[in-house]
Image (cartoon, rainbow, N blue to C red; front, side, top):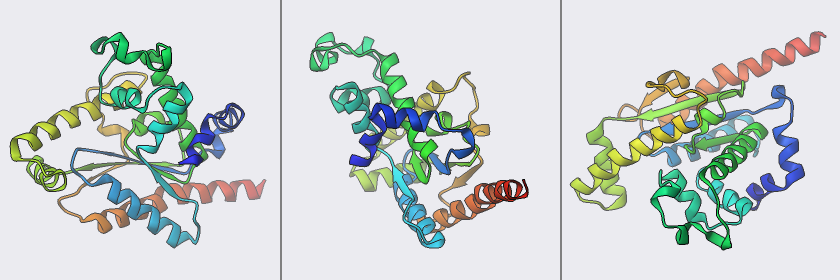
Amino acid sequence: MEKFFDYFDERYRESVLNSPASEDGPVITISRLTGCDAREVASNIVEKLNSQFGITKWKWVDKDIIYSIAKELNIDTQRIENYYEGIKLSNLSEMIMAFSGGFVSDLRVKKAIKDVVLSICKEGYVVLVGRGGVSIARDIKDALHIKLVAPFYWRTENVMRKKNMDLPTAEKYVIETDEKRNDLIQTFLDKKTKNTDSLFDVTINRISFNIPETAELVVSMYEKKVVKQMSERKKIKSVF
C-alpha cells in the first residue's frame, strides 16, 4: 500500500508523468463485465509473468488506487468510491461532501484519478483492474488491453455464489455495475463513443476458459504484442 502513496510525492509523480513516452510501461489493463473474476485473473497473470521472466516486478492493482487518491486530496476514501460508483456531487448533500472542512469538486477528483492511474501505468510492470485504465493508458505503446466478458446468466450465478445474493438482487447488481463501469471508461475518453470494443486488443469469454487458462492466454498475448515490440525497439537502438 505504501508504494502507491509514492505517486503523490510531488517530485516523484512529476518525474513519472514527464518521463519519455518510450519509457512508459509495460502495462496490462483488464476491463470486465461484472462477475468475470477479474481480480483472480489479474493475480494469476502476475504470478505467471514473474515466474516466466524470473522477476518480481509485476504487481496487480485495483482498490489500492482509492486510498492513494484520498490521501492526495485529503478526503475520505468514500468520496473516491462515490465517484467510481457514479454518484456525482449534485446527488449528495454539501455536509457529506465537505470532507475535512473543504469542498472537493468532481473535476478535481477526476484529475486525481487520472494522474495516479497514469503514473502507475507509465512506471510499468502493473496489471490494472478496472479504474478506467483502458481509457487513461490508451496512449502507452507497451500496453495490452483486455476485456473479460461472459453471458449474463453465467455472471449472475457467479455473483450470487460469491456475494451470497438471491437472483433478483444479483441481476440488479450486475446490470447496474456494468453500466457504471462502462460510464467510467467513457468518462476518461477525449471523445465519447457508442462502442468501446475498439479500445481493447482482445476480448475473452470467461465461460470458455477458467481463471488459470484465461491468465495463460493473456500472458501469451502479452508476449506476442508487448514483448515483441519492446525487443524490436532494442534491436533498432543497438544498430544506432
